[in-house]
Image (cartoon, rainbow, N blue to C red; front, side, top):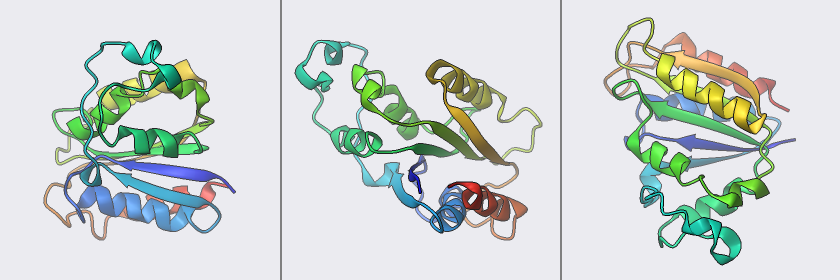
Length: 179
């Protein structure tokens, strides 16, 4: 049994990204401990690149926001799933703020071994996800993480557009595969 953290990068509760993440959680919860961290529930400031976390006791950030809660949760995770809407060929700014704040030596305490990616975009362009997939691959390579899979959904824009989409089953099935 693995401990899975699902980072949901959508501010829109009950939206397409949320529904895709919930389908994954439904499958993964059958054999694992799963916790969803939604950016809509946390106040996270962006990293300002000061690098003070490299010299501060405990490698803590000087910013006082909800990132401390997320650091604590990530320290015990085996698997992280990134779920985001796609805005201008990138993940949401709120999710990017969390990821950027992982530029801290504290990440060396994490036991994360595997990563998955769930993306939802309104456009139907064949290369819609290419930039994100490249960044994802760089993270996998740099941290020597195992890719457990991706579910990439095009053509869903308005809230609820994903309902009935085969991607929900794909996300559920991906969750079921994890032990």
